[in-house]
Amino acid sequence: MSQGLNDKAWQVLFDHFAILAEIDKNGFFEIAAKDIKTISGREPRLMAKFDHYSNLPTLFKQHHLSILPLSRSRYVIGQFNAYKEVTYDSKVKPIVKKLPDHIVSLDPTNLYSESAALHAAYLTGMIDDVIGERSQPTVSGRMSSKAFNFTIGTHNGNEYEVEVTNAQVEIDAGYETESSFVIVEAKKETVKDFLIRQMYYPFRLWSEKVNKPVIPIFFTYSNDVFSFFEYRFRDPLSYHSLELVQQKNYMIAHQSITKEDITNLLHLDIVKEPTIPFPQADSFERIVDLLGLLVENELGKADITTTYNFDERQTNYYTTAAMYLGLVERSKDIEKVVRFRLTKKGEELMHKPYKQKYLGLAACVIEHEVFQKVLSICLTEGEMPSRDRIVMWMKDAHVYGVGSESTYARRASTIIQWVHWVLSLPS
Image 1 (cartoon, one colour):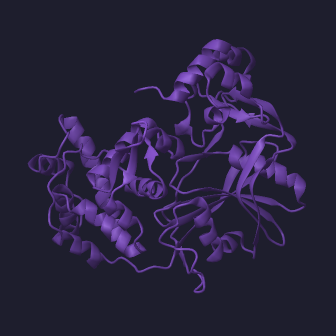
Image 2 (image 1 turned 60 degrees about the vertical axis):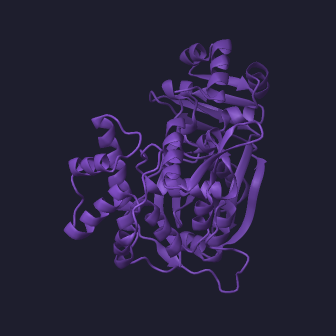
């Protein structure tokens, strides 16, 4: 895999400062922002912002390293357990909420920014329902952390004490109730994990500023589902003592998709297979998230990898899958850099109401011969056809860019998962 700019720049820094040797000797390595810029030639904020484990440079992953800010001008690198895995509990069914009738400035079919999703969550009463009290929005944006100490666990089971002084903190939203203050970290896509620092530093700052319990909440908006994960720090002085209290999911009221709607997809005309590699991207939900990212802006491969919970290989898989469906296309900017944007079809679909949007996305899948055959068997026989049977249909359809038998088997997994997604729409 080709190295990204951050990978190359961190390799220079690791060599220049013998960082691995220093960590092996001391357990950590402190680095100044000015040294990052001087030695690597890149902006420190671009070199130290990794919201998800997958965003970390290769050297960090190889040696189980993470980086945390100590101030606005210094960082510490160590084998820290800096990230928290996120598990979406499929048993938590969405509670339906309604946007007030008088609200016309917020379009529930176009919530493609974190702030828009948070506004919708507040106006529909989701925030109050999660907290269990009437709340008012009070703070958001960037601020200074002030000074505090904490302990953090490491990959090898040790603990280190970290001292923070006036590091930059950013809060996506803060809500106050009679008895508590809530800080929300928001993402507009499904995630596998998040950087605990994004909630811990604001938690420590506001725990000193208010005489009420501070409740950290992680929030994602994905596939029109609002998911809230309420946490608590079991030990306020321990970074890695974060534990889940509850998960709650919500949706804004919309027309329901029925099993009959899904059955009607079998009447779609079959399209000719495109000369685009057949998809290898098992999570259709993440394709929907990718489309949501592209609603507001064209993005380059590096932008998608950095913004989303992808590594470079996954970015390739998912952009190619969206192109296969005719929903994304490549473009080039003025400097001839390849970027991705929604096609006209993709743009129109992403702005439709819920039912039309998701049936439209399902149609983009089922109009392909192999997917339609698999769906037909699922609906008529009540079970997924065998992988061997699916591979046979793939060969009959002359899908593009699949050579070896092992590749056919991997692509069959994508077919199975996408059809499962289609079948899940009525629920």
